[in-house]
Length: 169
Image (cartoon, rainbow, N blue to C red):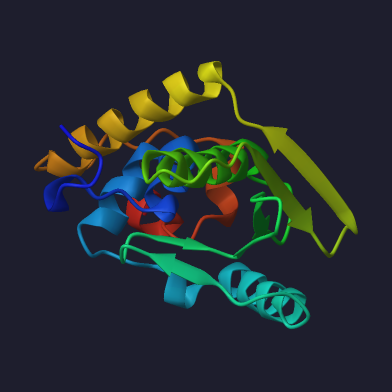
């Protein structure tokens, strides 16, 4: 299936959630959002907004992906509150690069900013990452089509998840 058909649209948040928790992804894609009750999400939005004040504003592309900003070297930049879900953040920015490359924009680098920690992480896009992202997009679309959420799998990251009560109470 082509990347940009309407029924195949995958957002950066969906890719992020895929690497965090398949069940959370399913809830999110079925309109069940618990994020409005999360203090961590509110704090993350505040850090994001304050950090973007001196940068360019967010970019929405195809009503599908929302990139914090792209610099003149075509590096994709994302602002995150913490490294708690570092792999998910890394794959989210790699997905943005993949998406842009499929639109003919030759970007190869991503930068994740952690302003609270005053650190950045650079990521170079490569064929191995592209393979992982392609597989993730296919898997996200399979999960989105499930009639029931995947089984809850308890881990230490569940304690701070806004969906905790929905999964375990």
